[in-house]
Length: 432
Ligand code: LLP
Image: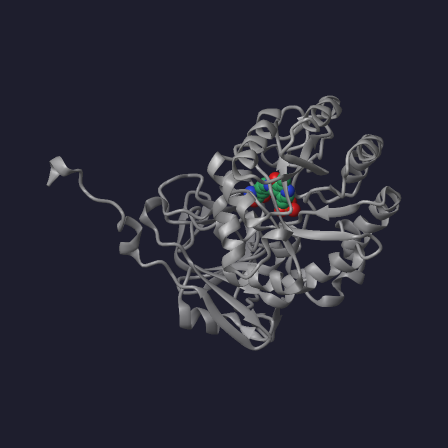
C-alpha cells in the first residue's frame, strides 16, 4: 500500500529515517516515496490489463517534476487542466500525445497551445467550448481531437466540494443533451470526435457509484460509437484512498489483508468494471490522481509549543493551512503520528498551525501521544492535493519537497526563499 512505517522507533520512508531528512532539510517538509507511486501505478495498470487502456495521472493532485518523471517513466499519460500543467508534463519528459485536457474554462490561448503540442484529446465541458475549439483549430489548419464530458447525474456520495457528477455541479454536459451535442459537433469540420468522457467525483471508497455511472453510460456510448469514429471512453478518476488508518496500511502485501476489504482496491475496481467495459471494444482511459499519490506522501512538521487553555490541549506546529489546506477546506482527516514512536497515555489534542485563522487546524480533540516542543509529527496521506494547494498566505514560504527511493533521498524542490514571495511586487510609480 505504501512505504511509510516505523523501523524500531523511527518513522521511515522506504529505507530512509525521516528524522534524518528533517535534520538536513528542516520543516515543514513534504516527503514522497517513489516506490509507492510506482507500485500504485502498476497495481492499477495490471488490474486494467484485460482492457486496451491508458492511465492519465490527474496531475492536479501532485505535479512535482520528480513525481511526474516517475510516472512518465512508468508510461503514464496525464490529465491536465491548464497550459501550465501541459508545460509541466513536457518539462518532466512526459508525452503530450498521451495527455487529455479538461476543465470548464479553457481559453483560446490554452486551446492553441494544446493543439500545437498534439494532445490526445480535449475533454469538452460545454457546447460553446466545442465551437471555440473548432474555431481555433480552423485558424491553425488543424483537426482537434475531442471528447464530450458527460455529466451522468449520479451521486458519488462523497464530500460536496468534490462531487462533480450531478446536475448541481458546473461540470460536463447533461446526460440527456449529449447525443444532440455530438450530432451538432459532427458538423464542425475541424473536430475529430475521438471519444467520450465522464468523471463523477473524488475520494470514492466503493465501486458502486462507478458501476452505476458506467451502466448508465453504456447504452449511450454504444449508440454514439456506432455513429461517430470513437476510439476511447474515459471513466475519469476518483478512486479513494485510506485516510483513517493510513499507518496500518503500510507494506506491499497490504492489499491482501482483511483491512483492504474496506477500501476500493484496484482489483475490486477492475473486477466490477472490466466485464462491463470490455464488450465496448473501445480504449478505456482512467484519470486517477489521489489513488496514485495520496498515500505516497507525508507532511512533516515540528512542534513549536504546547499550550493548555481551558479544556483544550493545543499542539502548535510549524506547518499550517497554507501548507495543507484539506482539513480546513474539506474537514478532511489526516492521520497524525510522531516521527519517534512514543508510549504512554494519549491526550486529546488540537494540532494547529501558526496562521491567524481558527480554521488553521489539522485535527481537533484527537487522542495523540503526548508531545513537546521540538518533537516532530507526520501528517499522513498528504501526497495528493497537499503541496499543490499550498499558498503563501501569511507570507509563509512554500515547504521543501523530498523524494525517497530505497535508501536514497533528494530534494526535489527546495524550500522557497522568503524574499522570493514578494520579488515580483513593487510600489506604483507615484509611490516612488
Ligand atoms: N478527472 C477529473 C475530470 C477531475 O476533476 C479530477 C479531480 C480527477 C480526474 C482526479 O480525481 P482523483 O482521482 O484525484 O479523485 N482537492 C480535492 C480534490 C479535488 C478533485 C478535483 N478533480 C481534495 O483535496 O480532496
